[in-house]
Length: 177
Image (cartoon, rainbow, N blue to C red; front, side):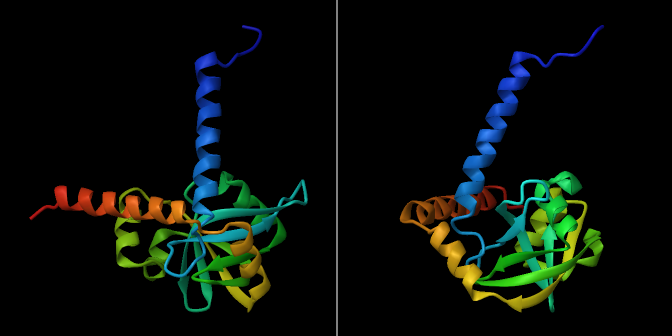
């Protein structure tokens, strides 16, 4: 066989997944990094393009360190960019900070980084690795830029409320007594 070709169905599925990811990411960026949100925003620079990028990432804190969930593993572009630069900006809980010295850690090393509800979800199907980074200086201008670039509109708040309501109802229906 001279070469392999991807089936039209597979190509269509790949395009659909990429489109879904773009829609979900753009929606998540509208409330990520805000006070009380479980996701933060990792602001990094593309190692080849040199372009600034923003990625919503499940973010926790332990003391003066950030813990970022590697849900897509070490193949994630944002992870590779952060490792190459050895730094990024993390927007978390209504503030933006420089973050540096990224290092991989396993789940056992970060149980206190996330709230109990998030920990329960992560224990079922969470990432196998996390990125731990030292928190640096606060950079308020970065937070202002993020909130200007990704404003939380009423539709996003409505969507977040609908997701929360669905989660509460699912939990009530599936409660084990």
